[in-house]
Image (cartoon, rainbow, N blue to C red; front, top):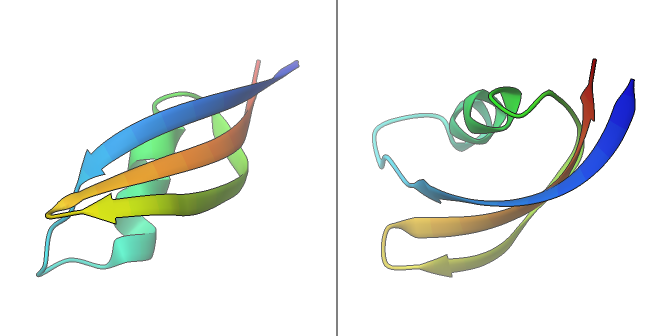
Length: 54
């Protein structure tokens, strides 16, 4: 198991749940342990996260 620090950008969906949008995006990298939204510009959110990978 390895712990990685990642930065990701997601397109915000005004109809959906923000928590689910972020979680689904981060799960493509591994199991999210912690994350934070660090910036929002227009419909883009920038996220910094710590994920655990097998």
